Length: 253
View (spheres, rainbow, N blue to C red):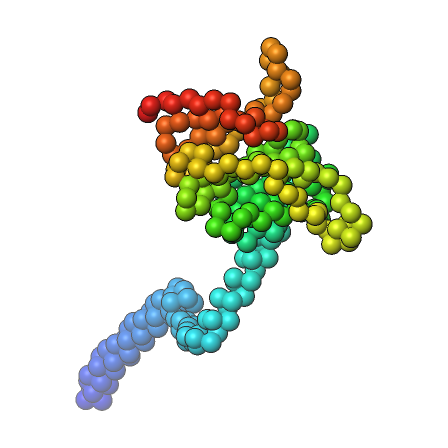
């Protein structure tokens, strides 16, 4: 009887301990499963370390200068390659700014005046040519050309120039004469002579423009008529071949 009661008293705590341990094991197992599930749902990008950025190396001044030079050279080459579709050719030979120009009636000669004190006449037989025959006319000392016009077709050229004493006109003949054998080798024409000249044609005022036209209307004989205007209010009319003054018109404003 005493043994039975002893066994009975020990059985109840033992069963309670076993049940408590089983419950604790179940709770621990559930916690571990939830923990593994939470870890499995974390995206790899969140756990991966961000890649290290390469350090920026500041270029030296020498490297910068070299790259700038290369850029400028490339830009110059690109500009040289560009060619406007209306650009037929380039006439070279002027050493200063070109102040005026005039084509002959046949379009085969171009006269230009330059601030270097010279008149140049280009023979343009072929606009695509790489070089052109040039006739250079040096004006008298101290004369600075301001305007130019062909006279008598393309055989003569009249130049307006400015000097200390005032404006002048110079007429050069035979500017379109065929070049000699020696001049052909040099690519230049022989300089012509002055056929007529007038000084102080507009006083001390400079000639702004010089225009030429053929006198074919009415009783006109086809001679070239020149018209000059200056910074003043007067306009003068000239006979191209003889240089005679035909008239003066004063606009008074």
